[in-house]
Amino acid sequence: MSLVRVLAAGDLQPGSLRAVDVPDAAGTLLPVVVVRDEDGGYHALGDECSHQAVLLSDGEDDAVEGCALECWLHGSRFDLRTGQPSGLPATRPVPVYRVAVDGEDVLVDVEARPDDESTTPTPTTTGAPGAPAKES
Image (cartoon, rainbow, N blue to C red; front, side):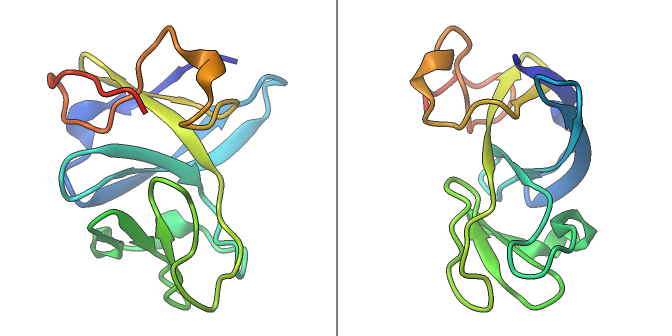
């Protein structure tokens, strides 16, 4: 699968999140939460807390702090770059997906992780729209 447009870059302000569904290679829609960290970088994670299967996107925008997303139900925090939990009750990471900003479009690839080198033609970015892309 390749990168899929999920929203316009201007749809998310720093420190906010949005639920989207992204098709995988078989066409199955996967729930993804797209997060714009406080510095303006974009991230995409599986939209289900690994502790208790609730949607991370059901939380308010104040769930984004620095480069972490807090689950609204029990307070587990997940690193936006790695999906790793930083404390209990979650002990397992959530999936993290490749994100790119192309002009004003935010794109997500649910088949590739941010460090997947097999997907190099399109750069990933954690910068603001219009800023030079940074390879992840």
